[in-house]
Image (cartoon, rainbow, N blue to C red; front, side, top):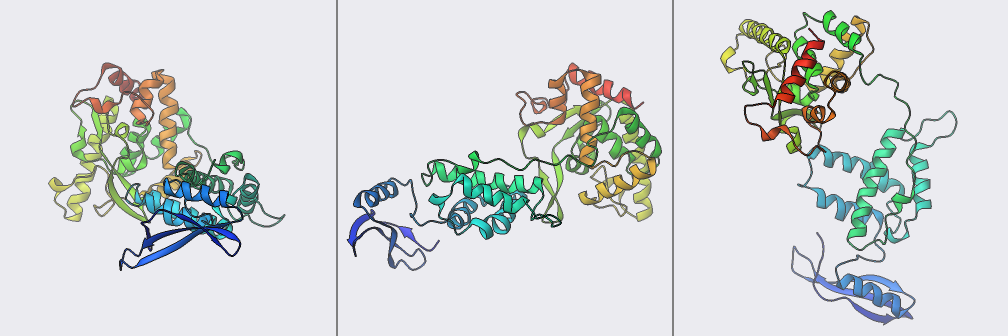
Length: 378
């Protein structure tokens, strides 16, 4: 921070114009500084700005998009959002917002300017590659919209001009989002002896996210009662695996699993123990359910690569790890027939009652759901 306002803004006549000035000081030295916030043709316009600034509802009339988005909005997010989210915001701001419209005065932004900006992001001449794909363009537009919405709340804008624009149409996905029941069974049957078979099986019967599966500890499993507690996740932050707490309360939950899933996990524990003996590791000290071939964390990025190869060998459509979750949801909705129960099993943030209200017990509805889904893969 280079300047802290201290005095009330004042309106002064200067060289035939009306200016708004405000006294303050340099926070690092304490030395007094006076800033000129705007210059106007009429005293009325200058007075309106002075009143807005005095009420804490506006910045300089010359404040640019870059000044607000970088110095105000991004800074307000530091320490308040996940680092991966902040990195995504900075990518959008530094790579695609500031270079194209950063010099535009905040108050001059119009839907027409932003329409052109969106075209610059996603449009391309025939035979040329666009700056961004439709999905990334939609993301960058959303980031700008969030920033400008805050500008509205702070009194710097009367309305959010992004709301009057249209995002580019998302292209149809070229890969499948989920498998059919037969495809899921084929994939599991073809990879019955793979060291991560239990991960794939558990993903299909529970719908756990990739990071939730990789963050599971043996202490989170109660195989005697057939429950899995989801309490942490292995995420990727700046390209590196990091163990983190779950994002929302609804993500922290207890799931019921059936007898077949319990058998698969017990077989996996025996296989894992044998691997660690060969590696010379203390099997009693193994914490995670799913470990790498050398006994450490599995890089989340590697799971997709492994699945792609195994799916190809099994003769089923290529699927991302998230596709296991989509498949679990699709199958669950059919065999369970209760969307509320499935929302709770999947840990969606928009549910009203979640499984974190349970301790070591699971409701009868969830027990039945676990058994029904388990039966699909027997």
